[in-house]
Length: 267
Image (cartoon, rainbow, N blue to C red; front, side):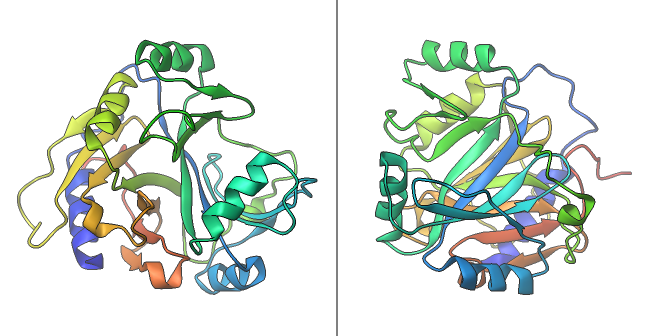
């Protein structure tokens, strides 16, 4: 399955003809949140995979977290809960009752007014805070929208990952209802891309949606690592192509691709 994922992503990235210039409410990915039962064990596991982890700030609600940050503001967040004191922390505790795994994925939407206008025209009920969430929207509660977090405490060493990872550029989803996700992505400015037919072999069946700075792939529910979690995997711009299976990354497929989404296959 891992090799198939690599082949399909290579085919997708090869179709991207230079830097996209179209107007898009969503520009790319923001960050992915992985709920973990044991934060210290997760820290060691991801460090062994070549990631630099930045400690999170203290949270009064019982949440503790770590950040795997990239220079463009995208990131992977590892999160756990000790003693929850508010609704958000209790929600994460509910997720953890089913075990560790990816629970939320964020899209990068720099213009909040534009985003909210699109969401409301779709009849959705976004909740507006530091992030814009879709918790009240059936089948879309695993998605949120952010403007990427460039923290004043970020240092160059936080981006110097030994495995060569430089950016979060792809999100793999297996939604309960793909039609609502397709409508959302399309209305937010994503363009559906047909992968090339060569080299796909036994690849996952997927619908691919290109963004100016990345892509979202929709796959069948049989590819879920957990039966109730629609976030299947991510793609990182890195060095040589490789795959980290869910068994090594807290329930998340992590794929590395050397090619950035804006690069053409002929370059």
